[in-house]
Amino acid sequence: MGDRMGVKFQHLFAAACMGLLAVFAAAQPVMAADRVNIAISNSTADFAILIAMKRGYFSEEGLEANPTVFDSGGKMMAPLGAGEIDVATGSANAALYNAVARGIGIRIVAGNGNAAPGYGHQILIVRKQLVDSGRYKTMADLKGMKVALPGAGTGATSTLNQGLLKAGLTYRDIEPVYLAYPNHVTAIANGAIDAAFATEPSATYAVQQGYAVRIASSDTFYPWSDATHIIFSTIFSGKNPDAGRRFMRAFMKAMRFYDGALADGGLKGPNADAVIDVLTEFTDLKDRALYKSMNTQGANPDAKLNLDSLRTDFAFFKQQGWIEGDISDPLKSVDTSFADKARAELAPYVRK
Image 1: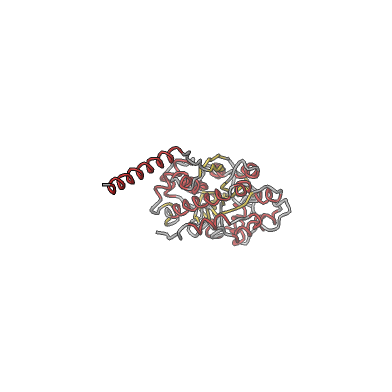
Image 2 (image 1 turned 90 degrees about the vertical axis):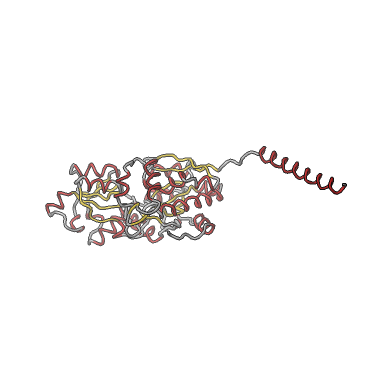
């Protein structure tokens, strides 16, 4: 009898303890997610950030993504350096290196979009009348022509220069016309420019409308070059390095999901519809058919940087006189430690 009472008491005591633990756990405040302020442009360049937001990868890592839209990458630099923005998507352009030379705390931490073979997102287009008339036959005929680019010292200028070099020209042989990407189609349609180094979907749209002829994409003359990068504020990475590592883990998951959307030079892989859903929701381009017909950018699923292309671009910017500060090594602007740690913590990626 005594033994049975003892066992019964033990069961009741254990149940009471479990109940108290449940009440205690329920009473504890939920740990607040680390807020990460992210600069985006609401363009396809933000693909991995947008995927991570939509698919909950940031939430899985205990992060609250707080995006702010900027209309140009140059406007992101000051708030990044001040710590008002923690992370940005952008290119390693002359403005970035000049900011680093002035002591602004920013670092390139990972690759974003790139020109993997078959996935050239930057495309040289030439006005159709020039091709039809025979005025344009090869890239060597760009000499003296007005060519639209997004701005002096941008990554696009160095990328196009690689194509010009292969045609026996240099950047000084063309007449650059600096226009925001959305204005390239209008300028080529009305004859204000002869050619444009455009991005998608503008290039495909210009060709479909009969304004231009597609000549070559960046992957054919500058393969594997980085087009865009992930940039950290050193205030953010120094204050909360663990959040930086978790950000990179979420970002890398998104890069791998995006890689699963790629096939045959575009968004035609198994994850394509899901990626297009994200892009049509968050960017200005809502035309699903255009997404499926245009070239898309490549991406390294492990977010690795192409250090050779960083060096090549930097040397070109220096040659053009666009680097104003005392900086001689572009790799001083790089910190791969966050991506390296995140990569080591994730299972090796195997493309399906």
